[in-house]
Length: 160
Image (cartoon, rainbow, N blue to C red; front, side):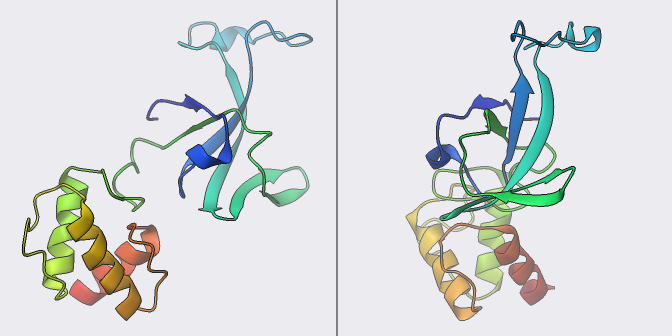
């Protein structure tokens, strides 16, 4: 996991993130199982959801009644991204950087959406956002300017 962050409101959430409910150490009426005694934060994370969209908010999670959808973040305490997926499955946006962004930029250029000022420099800035919006519009996708899983899949199909 990337670091888990306390969730103070829905505005902190990004599509694809995980949200958690946890039993806190010393919570009234709850005894922390000994297997959690050595974990860094000593919390018992007992429920997880996936942020499917942020506006309007939609969090999918499973319960004894099947798959449920929450439209509020109030019952969730923490949020974070699985390390194995962070920067790989989309969710790239202005301010992000690294090899995943460089790969996105290279794919945009190969698809005919040039980045004449900065090229594939690995920094997701205004130029990358504009090229990505153009690609999304041309591909019939939501022109959010952020690279989500659907956008990356469309780029992969186009570029083979």
